[in-house]
Image (cartoon, rainbow, N blue to C red):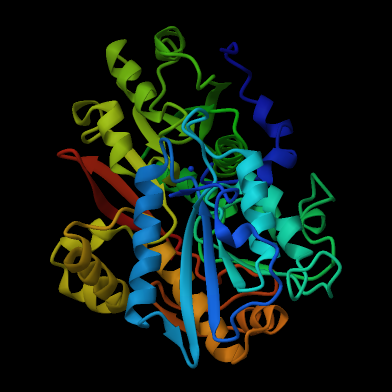
Length: 438
């Protein structure tokens, strides 16, 4: 565990990791699947959609709900688009031993999708770090899956990557995003807002709640560190006093010593840039254990029931604030008729999900659903089993009426939807508090 750093540390630390983002989270890798065979004669009436997500380990709860969302969208379309049957393959890019995604499995999944002439769309990955690996592979995919065929690219749709540098120029790393597009063409889109919105809007929310003295923590991961730095920079811009900045080692069992030192600084709020897997729950437990009265704010990487369970609801109730890119399902449980009517499409998704699976969807379910709906729309618009045509059709989507509302893809392949929400843990559940930046 590092020593407490100067508040000015982060001012100079926003480098390449700043623009790398969320979400580091069923069929195991591609190696044992029949679709790995390099057959180049696909079924002319079959289109395969593959997802690559960490289906083993601590992110399983979140990816279960993403896959449920994907399956819902396909079921509503009766697994068909026009004359094409849709086949869905749910791949795992994590291992039990690692407990998270691995570069080897993400690479294997991307290579298998590229080689399978029936695969037209790749949904995922979950983690931005994994996307950095698979994006260049899929960008150079050939039209028929053969090693020496004409390069066409293969459409990627991420339901959860939030690293800005995957799609936007990075002033601190001129390689981004071009390094992920070796052909110079765009084949990657995402339906979730990026971290350059979430971090700053979290700071704005802290100020609106009257917080003045802020201590910032990160987990040393690209997602958590980037978010923490963005949050800290925004604090500086709007006059909040960042009294300290430190990083935690997620492999450590507890952080009581660090929390004791932070307690002596009398912060109003601790901001943790990290996830459930990187000990968001343990930090909350140790804050309470040492008598630290400050509030805790965490990003969407902790917006899951597993975070509450790991922290213990009694350690979060009324003192933990969570930012999330979009509206959580809980926002539709308040009985606010005007709110539900304003966001009728997502309300309908939540109702159908509950009916289909018997419980409220977790945070990222709607993004899995939206990603699959976009995939089906791209196939419909292309009207042919052609990788390049499906990419072009997807990038041309404008004013899409989805579960998240009406939105478009911009020139970078990012959603134009910039809505985030602020949520508070109460009675052991996430409760929607307010819209941020809407």
